[in-house]
Amino acid sequence: MSARVPTVILGGSGYVAGELLRLVLGHPQLRLAGILSESQAGGAVAHAFPHLRATLGDLKFSNRAEIMELVGPGRLALLSAAPHGASAGLLAGFISWARERGTELTVVDCSADFRFPTAGAYEAVYKHPHGAPELLDAFACALPEHLATTDRPHIGHPGCFATAMLLAALPLLRLDLVEDDLFACGITGSTGAGRSPIATTHHPERHANLFAYQPLAHRHAPEVAGICEQITGRRPQLHFVPQSGPFARGIHMTVQARLRRALGADALRNELQAFYQGSEFVAVVDGMPRLKHVVGSNYCEIGVSVDAGSVAVMVVEDNLVKGAAGGAVQWLNRKLGLADHEGLTATAAGWM
Image (cartoon, rainbow, N blue to C red; front, side, top):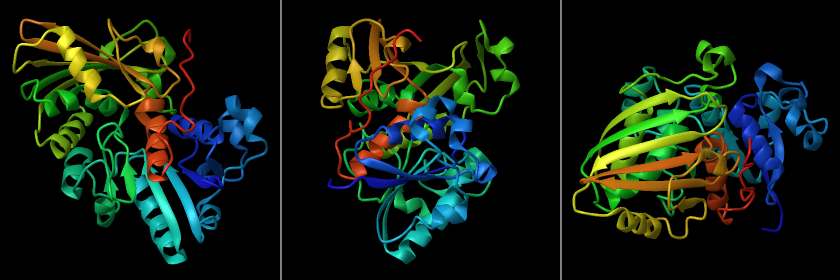
C-alpha cells in the first residue's frame, strides 16, 4: 500500500478507544485522521490518555460535524468504540454520508450493535430497538481466525468474553469433538467494566476479591451461540458464568464439554494446533496458559486437559486488545488487504 489509510476513531474517551488510538498511532499503514468525542470536543486528547502524550502532540477531540468533513473521495477506515445502542445510529450517518461522497469506507465496530444477524435477535438480548436494522446485512461478525473472508463491507467485532469463548468452543464444535452442551467460566479484569467507576470496579471492592455476576444470564452467551451456529451449523447450549477478578486487564476462560469420542490430551492439542495453524496470534501450548504471557498484546494462548470423556479448554487473552481493539485492527488489516499482523506484533509486557 503506497499511502497510509486515513483512519477515524469514534466514541473516543473510553478504554477501548484508548487502545484503538494506541494501535493506530503505531500502525505502519494507518494514519490517524481524527477522533470523535462529543463530550470532550475541542479538548486535548492527551488529557484523556496521558500515557500516549508523547505521540499525541496537540491533537484535539473533534465533534461529529468535524469528523464528517473528513469523509470524502478516496479510502477511509472507521473504528467505532461508541457504546452499545449508540454505535449503530452513529455509523448509519457516516455510512450514508460516505456513500453520497463516493468514499470507499471500511467500518469495524467494537460495540454489540452488529454482532447479531437480525434486529430481533439483538433486541431479545439488549431490550431496546436496534439503531440501524437496515445495515445488519452489511456487517459480518466472527473472529478473523474463524472466517477467512467475507464479501460484506463491514465488521462487527465479537465481545471480549465472546472472543475467549469462541477461541475454545468453535473448533471443538467444528471438528465434531464434543457434545452441544458447553460450560464456560470466565474471569475478567476491571477494565472490562469500562472507564466510568461503578461499585464493582471500585478498588477496595475489587482488590483481593473474586465474585460472579449475571451467572447463566450474561449477554455474551447468546452472541457466542449464534456465531457458532452461523459458522459450524451447530448451536451449542452454552452455560456461562462470568466472574470479576482482582486485576485490571485480561480474561481467563475455561470451556468444558463432553467428548464425542475417546481422545487424549495430546491428541486434542494436536487437533487444535492443526485448526489454528497459520493463525499467528493463537498459540496452543503445552501446560496451562497464563495471563502474564499475553496481557498488553494481541496474542492469546490455549491449553487443554482431558479426563474420563470430558475436556477443559483454557484460553487467556487481553480483553482490551485481542478481545476488542486489537481484534478490530486485525479485521481492519484484512479488509484493507494488509497482513493480519500489521501494527499488532508488540509482545506482552510480562511482569505487569
